[in-house]
Image (cartoon, rainbow, N blue to C red; front, side, top):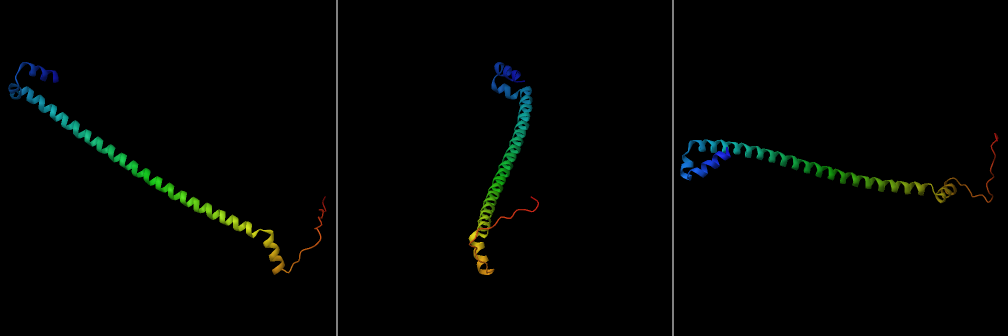
Length: 121
């Protein structure tokens, strides 16, 4: 079709080309085809942009979720360390001896403990 238009350009003047029915119909079909091509191209680009933006939003939401979970993990880890420190403090020998002496009226022995053997041995 383009070779037909190029041949017409070579043999006729511009005024004759505009009035030629064949060229006008060829131009109309070419413009109609280009309109649909441009329309489909715009729809395709719009769809791709919507897909890209939705992906960016989803990734940002996931990144925010990760930050929230990391903060939660740090708080839990801090609480765990606090509980472990409290357990160590409660299990300390000094504390247990103090409670035994004050509340249970126990006294420290001057002798070393005797180790008893099991009867089955």
